[in-house]
Image (tube, rainbow, N blue to C red; front, side):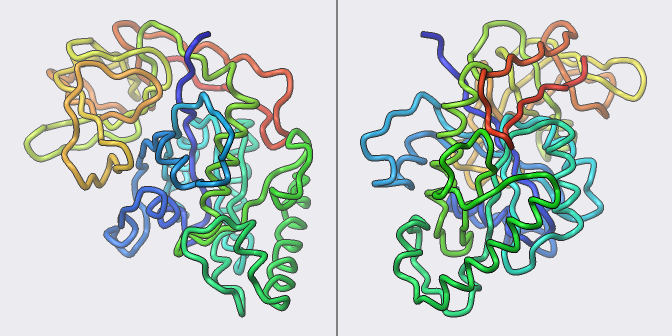
Length: 352
């Protein structure tokens, strides 16, 4: 049986709705607190291994087995000034999480993110964040929502249900039939909404379980690994102290090795550089703000976030595509016979 790679999961939403805080809770980090003004200004990447997911899910996954090796999260900025970065993250993803503040509801970048996901036909779920702000809500640190909900006073449950009803109504206005995830019988026709508190971790196990469950059930065929040249997307080109010009990239197909020559798109002619070093963040660490030193790798296989140190780069990348040794076009992904409604699949990545 062929092995499968971890799905790439993009996290989108309006500014200050809790995208990075949600990922901080999953990683056990404090990236959001160190960002200028508390606002994400770059695309980040974090690998979350299956073992860490199973530990967070606890009894929710008791008796279940998964072939998905983990999840590779892509954090995108929510501010209006970063629409291009949000579009890049949405186009790259196998799955997505749309984070919406359940108390504030739809905002401009919420709608923009929905349009991006619709444009690229990216499967997604909704994380209805900040349930801890519902009046009378009892906080349960790190607990699954399905358990926390049962321990709430009637008034808090009614208020949450009212806000969920409003959120589901707004999603319906935008063409999505949605419901709370634990009430859905057929994920092929309904969009899953998972109530969460990124601050306290409530509902995070439910969110992770939903993501790996949907990926394994509906996306396993397109996540099958294939040998060959690496194909990926450049998230950012920057100068790192002691390293020079580096490329933060996501490899979504094939294998990239030290010493390979990569080709990347620019506004003019394609640029090339030889891979001098491959630096990979440790699991549960962030590529743009690592807590520990990167691991130096001889090769990296999909799917992975990696910092590429080039030797003799002749052009700066301005287009987000590269291929190892020769420019190639990513093959269009095969759709599974059944995919979730919100999970109609796409692959519209441009040629290298």
